Amino acid sequence: MNNPLVSVILPCYNASLYVEEALHSVINQTYKNLEILAIDDGSSDDTLEILKKLSFKDKRIKIIRNESNLGLIKSLNKAILLAKGDFVARMDADDISHLSRFSKQVDFLNRHHEIDIISSSSSSIDVEGNVFGLPFMVLTSKSAVKFMSLIRNPMVHGSIMSRRSVFKNQQYSNLPKAIYTEDYELWMRLFKDNCQFANINEVLYYYRKNPKGVSAQNSKLQFTNSLSNSIAYASEYLNQSIPISTYQLATNKIIYPYTFVDIWKANRLLNNMLKIFRKKECVKKNELEEIYVFLNRQKIDFLGQVIIKGHLLKKLSAFVLILLNPVLFLDKNNITYILSKRSK
Image 1 (tube, rainbow, N blue to C red):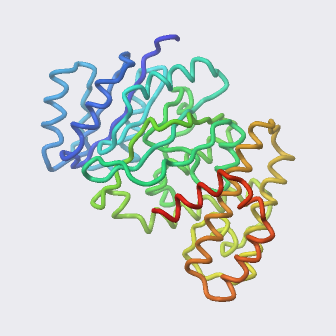
Image 2: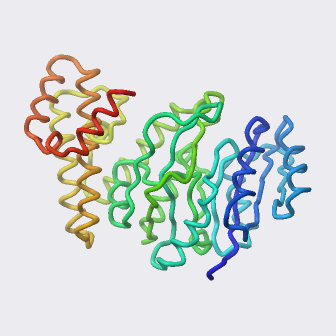
Image 3: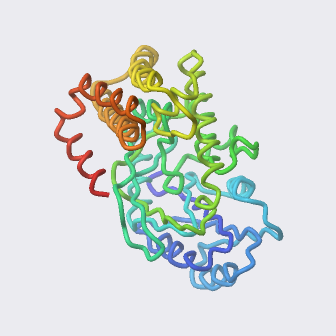
């Protein structure tokens, strides 16, 4: 298993602008034992021709052609069934992988046999490939990743690598609640199956913010489904009914009306999440430190949004909570985080 075969699943639909760059970032990886499953999902542009050209040069590329457009979820499940690798990795057709990504992920999974799925931090790139904004914050330890899942997606989907055995009992769901948030919905089911997740806190993936991409064009439904799935998962884990007005504030997914009382309830919910989580899980000291950093930044984010967008009484409530949480400003890393958010 020191040099396992990795099946890289790359779904493509009308991806002619970026798919060649995406594939080159896979072909040129320092890790070479790959099979690259490129699924053309009934594209009407030059995607298929580009795939054929590249597969002629690199026999590791295997083209799977959908005669009609099946959609991302069915294409992913189809490719997983065809994958022969010990490990399965994801890659999107308009993104870029760091050339050492697979080497580092394989090495991690070889050293940590208790971990089932690994991903990494990522940076956003624009349509021209320029990096912008802050890297996606990931938590590294399995307990910290699980805690993060109660609040938001803890993994960068395009950057994951998993053991193939993970998908024996679970597949991506085609139910309406999973549309455009199929990864998060699957992770929550896998957490319930006691799968173990971890992250490499290093930017090994570059996610393209494409205004014409599927996610951007369906961002409202993606946001709504993500909120709906996560509140159901958190409510079940915590064994309590969580008002959506409170949960959306705590997770900084504010789309419904809320009151100044909800602001206090959201702060209390985050504290109770950690209290219940510590009772249910065996949390090590270093993992707890990671969770505290994430929890404090979550408070900074939601209270900051209230101060920026809320009415006067809501702003005052947020300021009082900040004064009652001095650790938000006493930690130098939090100060750096706040300043970096302001400079965006």
